[in-house]
Length: 383
Image (cartoon, rainbow, N blue to C red; front, side, top):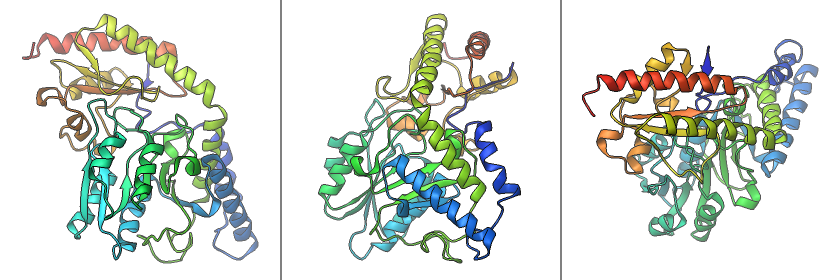
């Protein structure tokens, strides 16, 4: 049996989304920047997609900028806002559990002379308003805290954090790549100024995302050339991807209630079984303020990579952390941030459940995991 439990890394493209994309690959293939009839038809579809995305996120169509994904969106927002506003303020605050693309963007700014500070997450993997208040000041131009952590699935109180940022005259950005459809994002009500998304995290296509930029915020573009997206992101529009992302987002929220109920049932069943049948397990991060698709489990006395590889040989896909850093086997900065001891940092597996998983797959995984853990522990030097 083949089992995919790495939906936090990427999701399988929904066949219904593929069907919506196909005409834009074969029939409606015009360049949305062209003035001929095919190009203008494509442009109208592009504008309609912006309206649909904005409606779902509680924002304005003009704020929707289509990118190649959340990594590009995060780079554009973090670096673009800082560079465009540096004459006024030069302090950036990000959390210490952000995705690598946010961390590296901040590190680039630090090397360029900006002041970068990290607001710490607590042992539950949550960034509290109190922690932000301790380091924010009138020199801060931007606060960036992710809505949902990609490794441990914990949910931050974005509205409360945004309110504090605004009290100090700073903009608030959230990387919401892992938040769809688990959170009901409302840009206006939550006080979000800037937001990032990736289509492939919610059963849409890879290679397309959204940078939402509130009207009036100055941003220096990273990509220049044709002047698309109001000069904020030049390049030919990926219309098949954009239409796929838009429809996937609509499906995600339309089917949200049933989807959340289903993945939670699978995750809870899985955890109940393995917690009873395998000793020495612990969940990393809050279990109450957590998306229902995520389970990050600590296995004492075994390396996480060994578990991952053994399960992979049995047809089961899981991960040890962020997919974007799979080539780097250093200890997770997220698990380090929440206080795991050094000897436990590499003993963790992320199981992320999704739309296409079945109970039969979960039962197969439980059986395989029990065999894997028993075998690896039998010759582990740590008892």
